[in-house]
Image 1 (cartoon, one colour):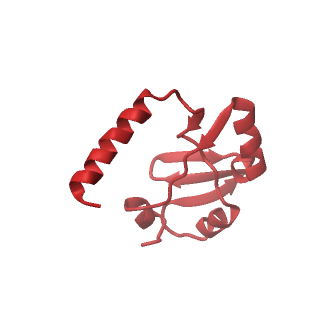
Image 2 (tube, rainbow, N blue to C red):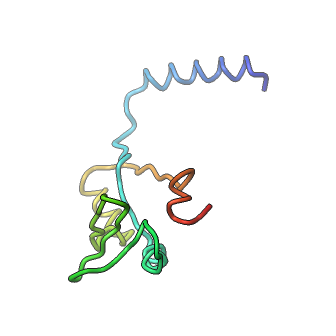
Image 3 (cartoon, one colour):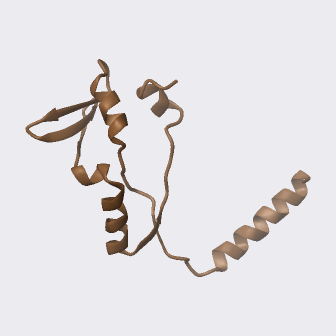
Length: 106
C-alpha cells in the first residue's frame, strides 16, 4: 500500500471510530503479576526487587514500593473483578525500553 493511501485510510478510519459509540468499558490501568516472574525477581540483587515481609509481597524500585496483593496473581480473580466492574477488556503491555533494562531483560 502506498503511503498516501495508508494515510487516507488511517484518517478515514479514525473519523469513523470517533463517531462510533463506545463498544464497552476498557481498563487501561490494571495489574496482573505472574508468580514465576515474582519468583525470579526475588533472586535479584539489584532493583527492581521483590521481597516478602510479614506475609505480604512487595515490589520495590528506588523510593517506589508497591504491595502485590494475592489477587494480582490470580487470572480467575482478575476476570471476576473485571466482570463485577463491568469491564469488557483490559489492555496489556509488554516490557520494553527502559523497563526491559530495569528487569534485566535487555
